[in-house]
Image 1 (cartoon, helix red, strand yellow):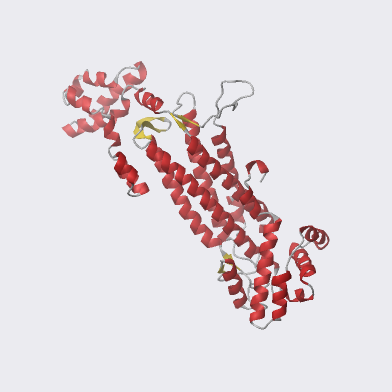
Image 2 (cartoon, helix red, strand yellow):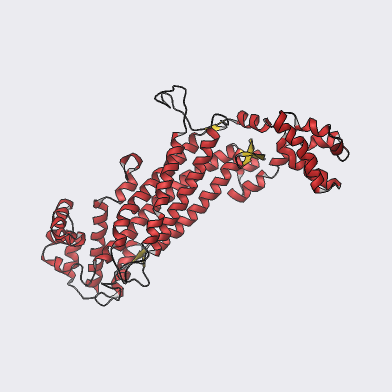
Length: 439
């Protein structure tokens, strides 16, 4: 991923230094386990632990000749350890190191992403409670439907990211497996006890059955989860982009002093951050299909998955880390306009209360289709002539034969639509002091 969309902590996971450091720990743990079993000299294991090291430039130099990254690493390691290095990598195959290392890296990445989601959840929770009872129009098909609150909008996104957190915890556990099982996974040249020791040392679970590789359905699940999280990022970003449109302007990204929105038009305040998030979500989601295609490898192993993972693992995690962090900052700084929300609610002359009138008429005994036609008759006049919905209903003889003037007025009470907000909030956030103080 390019530096523009990268944060240092996540980037470090995918740098050679971290990768080779994990490789070294895998080889050291395996050597120590073999020494404990009397398969290699104890002094060899001590030498690897005490003198084990590597030189990245040297690894690159050797790899340029041998065309094999693990052999190049082992060559550099041997130059640090000395003669005892001949006991390193006994009975192991390259994938034992590569796949186990990838599991560690994906866990490290998942932990950062979980922290990112926690930060976003905190921002969404705070702003949801801040605007818990702020009325706004709910839209379906982009058209005014019925009133809701801005807090409920944000609470819905909170609930979605809470589910995403659970999904990522599950995906993290599924990908956290270790394979030290030899050339085709039969343990013919390395005992299962070695794998168990390495797994314990790295905080992994032994892969129940590997071939030469850890099965890639685990990785596909991990990247699919990242894709779902990215889609949730895009959904919230798209909502903000729509709310910032000039004709709506119910909320907008914070526009800093000195910020410029256009090289040509000094008046512009564009939703550039959320547009950026929409684009990044497409990138992360685009990596899901290659991860799934990696599941089908030839026989016990081929390397068609390798080049894919070298690209998608760093890119997807780095991009999503950046996106989640940016989205949290957008929510924290989001500028909200309650007066504009109220003005938009009132824009259609009370049409948002049409269902209440329909239900009141059918409740009184009017046949539903007749009631629908009667309400729609006045509603269409509001659309076409910009008139007042309540006044039209009160002037409609058929409607008035069922509902009196006072009864009709009562149906236009906005509080009716927000009377269960606290119930919904408790479902999403659990019992909360904020609800008790404000309720």
